[in-house]
Structure formats: C-alpha cells, structure tokens
Length: 483
Ligand code: ARG
Image (tube, rainbow, N blue to C red; front, side, top):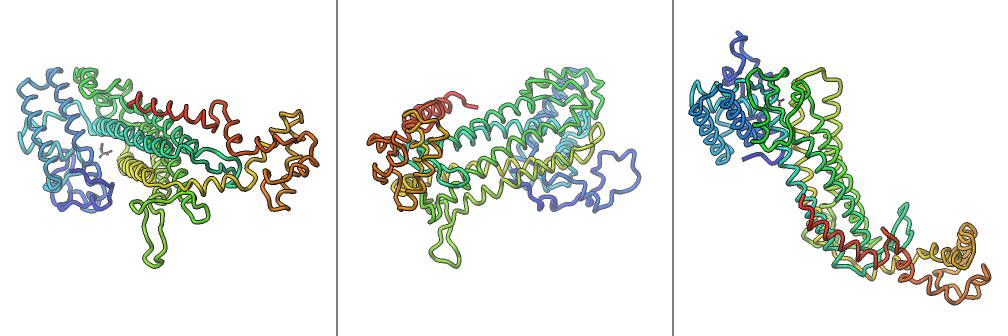
C-alpha cells in the first residue's frame, strides 16, 4: 500500500493536481485557478500517503470528539466512521486507489473520498480541525509506531551480536588504539562493546517516544478549537499519553522529528563503526573475519574479489541520516510561529530516516549471522606486536617499581626485542634481568595471553570471567526489556 522509499517518483501521480483544480479546499476565497506547475510543487501526496492509515485513524477519533461535543449526532458519527473504514480498506487493498483522484496531500485525499461517499455529511468532519493539527497528529502517531518497530529491530541486532559472541567465546583478538595493536581482548568483549552502544540507542528512542506521544489535535489551525471537544478523551482513544498544552506550539514544532533523527543518527553512527571494523577485519591484511557469500558480492572484473558491500552500504547510509538531521534543523531554524508550509518538507527526512534505519539494522543483523571468525589468525595477531608490554610494566609495578619507571624500562626492553626480532616472552631471562634486577623467571607467566586477559578482571574489563558475566547480563537485559 505505502511506497517503501520516500521517492521522488511518487510526486507524480497519474493525475496531477492541475487536472482537477476544484479539489482545492479554499474555493470560496479564490477566483483563479492554481498554476499547474505550482500545484505539482505544492503537493506532498506522493510522500505523505504513507500517513494514510494514521490519518484515517485520527479522523475517526476526531469524529468521536465532535460527537461528544454535540457537533455530530450519534448516527452522523457512525456513518462517517463507517465510510472512513471503507476508505481505509480501499487504500489497504490497492495502491492504485491513491492515484484514482488527484490530491494536494493525504488529508485532502481522505476528506475528498469521504465527501464523495457520503456527500455533505463528509464536509462536517473538518469542523474544529485544521490540517495543521491533523498533520502533526498523523506524524506523531506514525512515528510512535515506527519507533516501536525500530526498538524490535535494534533488539534483533543486539541479539545477533550476543549470538556471535557466544559462538566464539574463546576467540582472542588484538584490541587497537590509533589502529595500532594495543592489548589483547576477547572477541566477545568487542561484540559487547557494540551491544552497549545499541542498548543506549534503544533507551534514547524510548525517551524520544515519550515526547512524540503527545496529542496535538484540538489545537486547530493555531489558536485552539472553539468546539467543546474533550481533547483528553481523543488522546486516550489514540493512545497518546498526554495532550499538548499550547496550541501554537502543538502545530508548529517539529522538535520531536529532530530528536528522533538525532537518536537515529547515533544508531547509524554506531552501525557505521561496526561496519568499518567488519570491513577492515575482513581484508586479507587482517584476515580475522570472513563474510559468507550471502552478504558479500563479487567484482564484475576481478574474479578473485569478495567485497563487503553490505557493510559499506550501512557505513555510507549513515550520511543520509546525518543529512536528514541537518535538513530538519535548517528547515525549522528561524521559522516564525505558528505553522509554515516549510514544514511540509519534514516528511521526506523522517521517512528516509526510518527506512534507512530499518534497512541498515536488518542488514547488519544478517551480516553478524554470516561472519566466520578465524581464531588462529586473531590469536596470532594478538600474540605479536608486543601487546603484552603493559603487562610487563604491571609486573614490575607489582615488584615495587613506580609505574613511570616501569613504563620507561619496558620501552627499552621493547626496542631490544624489536632489534632481535623476537616477542617479549622470547627475550632470554638474562637479557631481561639486565634491564631490571626485579625481573625473575615468573615474568614469563605474566606475559602469557591468558594472564594478560585474566588480569583485566574489574567491572568492564576483558577477563574471560567478566565477559561471561556480562554476556549473561546482556542476555537477561534483552529478555526483560521488551521495548
Ligand atoms: N501537507 C501539509 C504538511 O505536510 C499539511 C498542512 C498544511 N496546512 C496548511 N495550512 N497548508 O505540512
């Protein structure tokens, strides 16, 4: 029913606004016809038809509001709601329905179909309502639903991270700073780092949801409605937790869109870093990961290539969402109160953000389920390049040397080892002793990968003991917090 992508093509329906300018809602005040090119430019129906279902839903709730306000009789309200239900079913049955008649936007489309079906009675529905509070209501309803779906998508990606960690519990990889080998870490620890980022992303979205879930309907064009509509009852009907407290603000702010896109930007930023790690670790130079054929592509020219397009696209698509955030901020900056048509431009940014997030999260989860970790290769990388140098310094500290002096001493030992083309644990004991008399046979124990990992046993560290604990906690977190 709804186009998946916010797509420029949808601006053009088979019938254009100019084919039927009398669909305008302001006929009384106007004598002339709308310029056809302007009508096309003005139309948002190609995009905002995605709000069709929530527009109908909000109209039904408004209908109830008008009934309790005494504007509509019970039977009038029933007839309107039943016609709206039929319209909803038509729209859900066939995408072609939206192109049968031209419309400026989804709100005028639904209203025009209603009038077509039940005549003058349909014209009563817009009492005490404006498209300004309507569009804000629709967008909030729609976004709320999408946030709930995104929470599930985020959770699935987190689950894929946990499964990958569980399946490779013993794998050791080099940890990097400045992309230089730093200290050995458990692969599961790396997985859990991304798990944490996505956990915060879920929290942020849940937080945004609270401010999205406020009812603007009843603000009318800008000043509030003069009909005795019980706004709180309408809010309850639509599942809104709160009712907006100021009509000007209700119709004219899009901070909830900006907040959402900002939270979405962080999701994409996190996914882009994960993508980059996976891309890098899948190169021959690293050789840590291999992506299965399901999520890689070949080259049209070079037969040997296996490219990580899936992750490159996710990395690249982060830019779209950051762009959407910038677009929304720029669109809103300096707008006078209250509604301005500039704000019609919010849809494309929001729809594209939601689509990009959904697509990227789904592909990332699939990639995570299609990675093979080369344990020998990662262990070998973690064992070469003096990743245990800090451990040697800590050894000297345990023997009584101040850390700064230990750092300096180990630095000299590393130079000696590089000159001899050996690792620290391959330097003969006598050589080591020549740098410090504190060094003894037990040093070799301290320099093992096992010891290096095991010592990082405080909260948040990479010791196997801690990581097992964190994996269990992460699992429990996923099971407990559904949203
Ligand atoms: N299509 C418009 C939008 O998306 C709906 C509100 C139009 N209101 C108006 N007074 N022109 O923002």
